[in-house]
Image 1 (cartoon, rainbow, N blue to C red):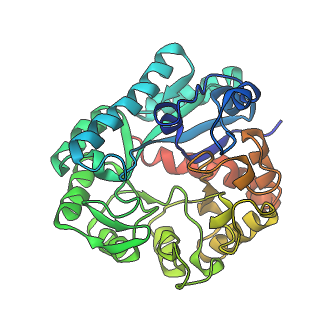
Image 2: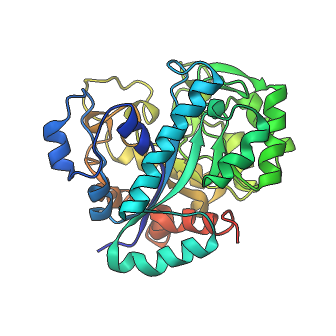
Amino acid sequence: MWAMIVDAHLDLAHNVVDLGRNLTLPLAELRQQDAHPDVPVVTLPALREGQVGICFATLWVDPRKYIDPESAHQHALRQLEVYLRWEEQGWVRILRDQASLQRHLALWPEDHVTALVILIEGAECIREPGEVGFWKAQGVRLIGPAWNRTRYSGGTREPGGLSELGFELMHAMDENRLALDFSHMDEQAFWQALEVFEGSVCASHSNPRALLGGEDPPFANRHLSNAMIRAIGQRGGVIGTVLFGFFLDHTWQRGTERVKLEVVGQHMAHTAALIGWDKVGIGSDFDGGFGLHENPEGLNQPADLHKVGELVPAPFRQGVLGQNWLRWLQGVLPF
């Protein structure tokens, strides 16, 4: 059996609250019940069976539906309640500090319970920067300011820099020692944030722009330029490769043949050539607005993530599958 896998991006609570999925079911049973056009890939039992020992679990509020800060805030709290309820029921452990991480590492070989690191994706649920401390107290350990454009940052398909509130958010995150997730941030906002933010950084689920048509295609600013990748590496950040077909091959379209698995290896190798294999990981985004048929060929469930290791040079496999993110977390979670 393979070692612990760490997946740095799963929209678990979104699947429960917004799609009505019961993620405590076995994956085969959920697939039988689910009427959503995107075939589900993740449930909690499937994560255990796949030896996904840690995942970064999002609070993601669709800005197209929750357009004001208060409604976004309340929706994120509903998602947070999902994680807290799972913790009470023993389905997951939430990692809040180094002690909880060490306890999890001691228990996981016996029970294979998946631990969650809570990540805010798109910061609209943070009503104002002074609220960062509140979210930290709720267990949040990373914040990604953008999805599309938010009140804080330019983002996917909606370019632009940090707003005045965005700069205040960076300072509040520093004061509260929360990590910054660059995924979805527009490049202008990225460089501004990098200049003022002093804490730990990562890109939980991002791929190299150089392999996705460069600057011209739609969604180009969703991906990382080579300069951005190098800058993240210089700050000790890890980059999680996202496994959505369109973010691996920009010519791919839904309903066509799935992207070949080896394309994932090409993206990882490109990133590794710029910053080293020790800063490459997985950020699958499984069930994050797509499903089974939108994943690369062969990635049908969490247990298949170990196949990604076969795309990596042997000395670096365990690092990419989990140890790189684990090492990063050991520098991020508070004592």
